[in-house]
Image 1 (cartoon, helix red, strand yellow):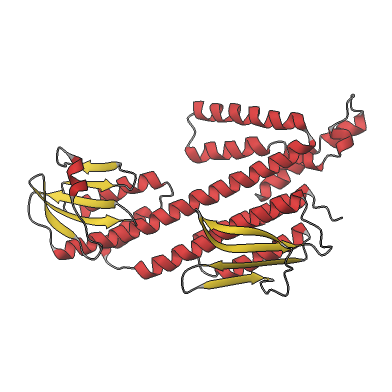
Image 2 (cartoon, rainbow, N blue to C red):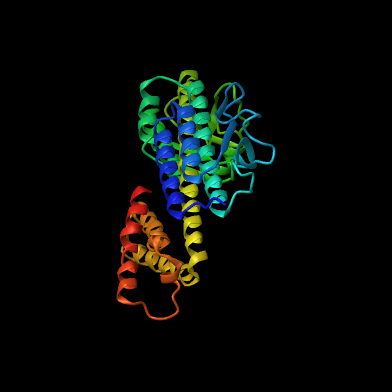
Length: 360
C-alpha cells in the first residue's frame, strides 16, 4: 500500500501556495497554473489519475489533468471546487491499485481542490473585470488606491474619501448589503434617508437629500449603494456615469479582497491540517501547539505588531514543531530518557521544520 510522507504533503502545499499567490497577482494563464497544480499533486501524492473540470463563467469551461471519462475510473474520489456555497467544478483522483485514498492523500487532495477553487475564482474575477473595464483619470486614481488595499473594510472609506475630493462633494455615504452605513464628510442628520431612495442599475439616480444636491448608484449585486451630496450645484449625468465607473472598480477590489481572504483561509486550513498530521503522531505536541499559538498571539498584540506580522506569528506558532514529522516514532514517543545518539537525532527537527516552513 502506497504511503505519502508528511514532508511530501508539506512540499505540495508549498507549491500550491506559490502558484495561488502568482495567479492572484496576475490572473492570466490560469489554465497552465491548474495543470501545474495537477502535476504537483500527482507527483507528491503518488496518484495514478487526477482530473479537473470547472466553470469559470457561462462561456468559459476549463479542464486540466486527466479530465476524460476513460482516464478517471468511476470509483475515483471526488472533491468539489466551491465558490461560497456554489459548486464551480470537480477534482477527481484515483490510485493505480484501486484502493481508497489514505489520510495524507485525502488531505492533500482537499488542499489541491481548495487552491484550484481560488484559481478558478481568480479567473472568474478577471473575466468580470474585463467586462467592466473603464477609462478616465478619476477612475484610474481610484483604481490605483484600491489596488493597494486587501482588507475589505478599508475599501469603503477609501472610496468615499476619493470621490469626495475628485467629484467636489461635501459628504458621502456607502450603504452595505448588511445594513451598515459608512459615511464621510458632511451628510444629512439621518443617514437612513439614503436607504429610502430607489436606485436603477441602468443609470445613476440624481436628486436631493437633506436639502442638498445628491447622486447615487447601486454597488454590488444586492442592496449596496454609494451616495454623494453637495450644496453648490446639481450633479450631471456625466458625473453620475463617472461615479458608476468608480463603483465598478470597487467591485473589482472587493472581489480581490475576498479572494485574498479566501486564500488566507485556505493557507491557514492547510497549516492546521499539517499540525493535525503531527498531532496524530505526538498527542502532547497537539496541545502544546494550541498553547503556543495563544501565547504567541497575545505577545504579538502586546508588542503592537502590525496585523500582517501577527498573522506571520500565528502561522509560525502553529508550525514551529512541524520538523518533528522527520523524527522516527521510536524516538519521538520513547517512554524513557533519550540516549545521546537519540538526542542528536531529535535536535535535527528545528532544521527540518525550517526547511518545510521556508518553502511555505
